[in-house]
Image 1 (cartoon, rainbow, N blue to C red):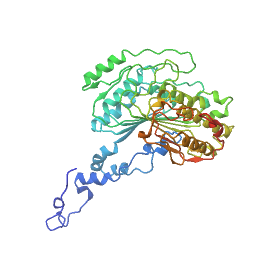
Image 2: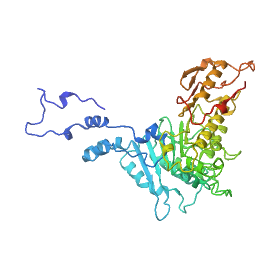
Image 3: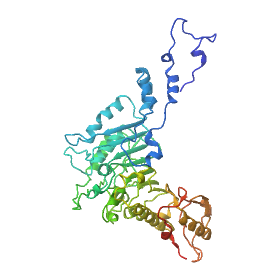
Image 4: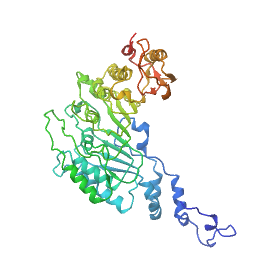
Length: 478
């Protein structure tokens, strides 16, 4: 913004340059000053709140009673023109369910693209896609095909280039948008009307990047003709749908440009909401949740390739008391990460809501929670760390650690040494330079934590309704 000197808005004698009889209005201020004033009204959108993102998913995540920028934009045409770039810096689009059937996603969003282009608002920093249509598709026949999302995402990133993308959608819609299979046969057992998927990346130069299957680097596309050719060549290689014969499991894999490959994402957050309703069913531990997680991390079948982008190094997984066998998909198939965040216990009052706890034994919830974390701890404690656990630097949980189990862990770490120190209630830390090689150590000197881990943190400690201590009794030997 250019500097505005006092002489430019006042007379030489310090008085206003306007005639005494002329009314002075805020509308007479230069555009630069008005922009500066409006800047103080600019706040982060509700969907950026970590508390909200870690809570039970809901479709009104972008709603707020406090919207001063929107109110200011209604004052006059001048103010709206000034506010447009700020007002649409964080944009959203709602995919509604049409009574006549599914409408192609590219057709629904075209007016949004036209508006953004005609008003030169392409510099959108964050974009939220709210999908109320569970049968969302970008195929004119309404069928699910692997190139459905590829066309849509490529078109979206040709118009805007957000560094923060949030999708709020039912599991089946989220699977369609991410080219992930979702098992729907037992979906009625779960109370999860929508999930959150958030992808973030660092800002970069404005080039279209598209990664196909088996590619390590994304090609740079500098004009529309190259982009069209790249999309055509890639989509021509996409396979047709393969029937799996497993109930409502959509069994296709996109070999071309999926959402995870269209940009070099750095962070991923997946919030799958509440699993509590399923605990009221017979043999709840066998229930299979509608989720993109198995295909996301490549655990659905031994030959499956993970859909998650190899550039993602920070992953957050949030769910409310997921079954241990579901969480095991993540613990046994951990992607190559530097940081893993998990939260399995709700922060809201759902456990006190009798409508949500009908025929649910609360002890079952805590036992599954404890078993899930025990499985993860076994992988972290593995000697030496196996697979991608050897690369993990930070593990953080949004849940409190069991106080009895934490006390045992403190005593163990004091024995193990290797630079580890108690950094707070529920927190272990060490410096990278204190990590010692494990070669030559004896059984009396356990090799636990000899990977890259430098921080292992819980959200404090607490006495849990069901103690996790028995699951950690001598986890690394006597």
